[in-house]
Length: 157
Image 1: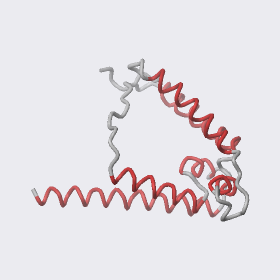
Image 2 (image 1 turned 45 degrees about the vertical axis):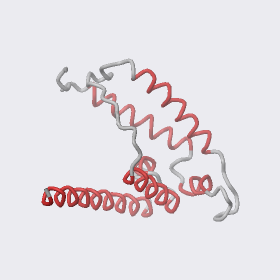
Image 3 (image 1 turned 90 degrees about the vertical axis):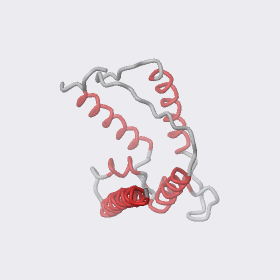
């Protein structure tokens, strides 16, 4: 296994990927919480009008992901020279379902997905700052909860 590269190339690749991702989010309307909530309002309960336009953004992202993962599966090293290690777990457990449900509820209520929310910090707004703060607090709470569960299992052994 090759040691992790200390050159500037991995940082440039990561920065370029971040800029392309943020630009795609902005161009696709994913940084506008009203547009996202309009897409998620399939039943017309909130605004009364469903906005299906983000389905094309998500479909394009899915297409890019499918092609990328098909190519990545044939490579051992990334462009930055780091080894590629894809997840191998395929089981569905309570943590996965619960996390997905919390993610969906948070996205639907706020209109922000974590990636677009971070990108939205550049254009400002108290609402996105509050969302990022709540998301960070939730992540810290989840880490504390997980550590507590692991510690209590160790104490039972």
